[in-house]
Length: 173
Figure 1 (cartoon, rainbow, N blue to C red):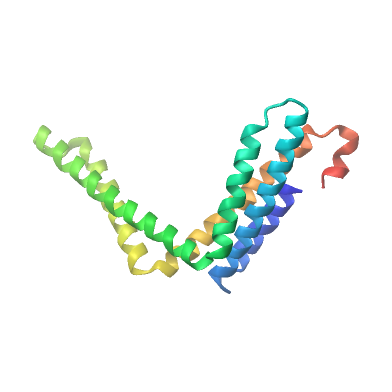
Figure 2: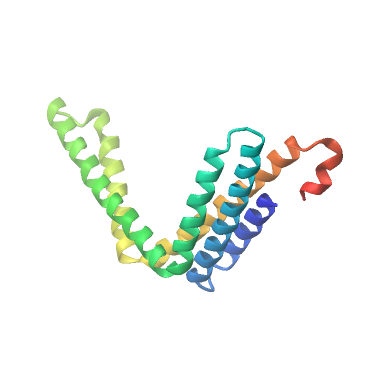
């Protein structure tokens, strides 16, 4: 069921981007909360069987907390995430360009250090573009979340089918 919900969310996230990003983040929040609840429930069941359960419960609680934050502040969450990524990209770009400059000075030639320069410039461009046009970054982020959910859901479904007894595969879906 978790896999089907993730795949459905992924499709909706990709299809609904033109409507509104707040909708995407609200759906994402609902998915996080539901997935967290299921994870906690599985963790409790595994604890009763004396299996490893701590990671499931901790991950589930983290998903519920993240889902609640995104649900309460979807617009702020999207802006904050884009701002953090933009600042990281700018700082990373400056650091990589610094490494490039230091490497080029030490060797008195550019040599293989040019890759650091290109990486630094790419990072700076990403940071500037995200700050200059956060809406485009938000759309890209929504698509990436949707693609992630599709892949995640598909993998959960594959794993469920692999672990299910042959006669019980219909019950999974």
